[in-house]
Image (tube, rainbow, N blue to C red; front, side, top):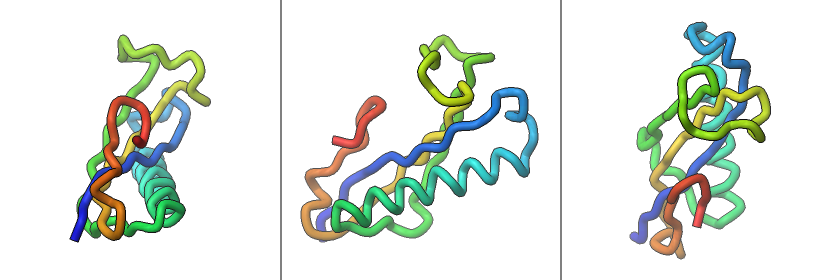
Length: 95
């Protein structure tokens, strides 16, 4: 079966990035976003494949001026299904 990768996103308040419960909620939101993107593209998320990355304007050199809240949680997942081999999470985009 073909496999590929996709991103999901969640945005939050950088003042709460040390709050484990808050961050866990953002991770769930980012995974939900990735799952919805996969469904829209006709593929499914491989269970347990999620990897989370958090970026905050408070401690990053990445330009986050246009990110709502300036805290970004990205969830990268593996997907499978017809056409999944053409899906690649690269940079900030799903391509």
